[in-house]
Image 1 (cartoon, rainbow, N blue to C red):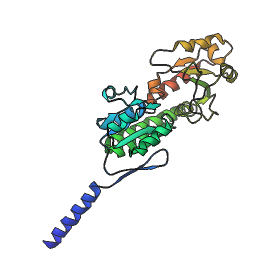
Image 2: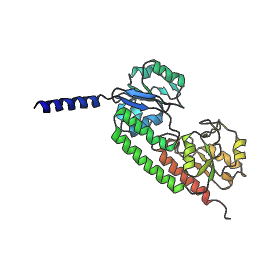
Image 3: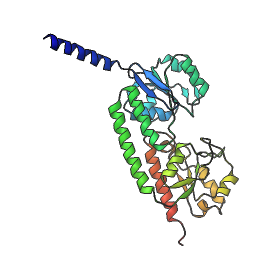
Image 4: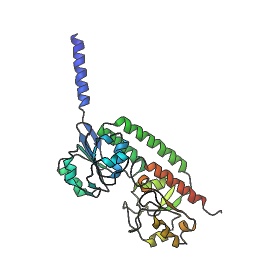
Length: 296
């Protein structure tokens, strides 16, 4: 009996230790973020972070987020703490979060440091490659205690990603100009996740040598690059009127062949599992561009 009692006591201590084990997750700034227990009150500082938290199975823990956090629909009911580039620090602090998830390239860095100065735990996210989206979801699951759901979503994402990669791996390259906005004329540079999506589809970003996330360019630079396809986003499902502005440049290959395409920015410019939906559309558009090449 004494031996049995000792074993039970040791087992209970072990279980207690596991139950109170510290959670340590490294963020995209290289910092180890530590939590004594899974986060129960989370604030996200970008629309894609709110969406990813729901995908990870922890949407119920979201107590605050920024403007334009509209997916899934439940996110629209969550308290707002300003915009991603102009945060309301008082509103964030008032929510008493045990975890704040920030966007490295989108949030104001001094404001993030002020949040840390207030004693808040901040996790920095910056997925620059398609596969990073799955990793982001998994880490959110660890931080919020929803690993089973998060790991399942990440696994399915990776399977779809690899299938899309295999389907497009040996296709001829298509030179692409990706237009985020008209004025200023804005595109994506080398580190942006959309450049990785273009590569996934066997495309080549004509401004992929630029190191900025979202560089501004000139019309002259686009004409000189002579893309075979132009892909624009705009503000939703509707094709932006300014995509047609390129029609006057009749010598550009993309215009001559009618390769002016549109993708909803919600599925292409948000670093969430839905980006695979956008990538599939992008790959389909580039297939159309290939089909319009003149016969040799």
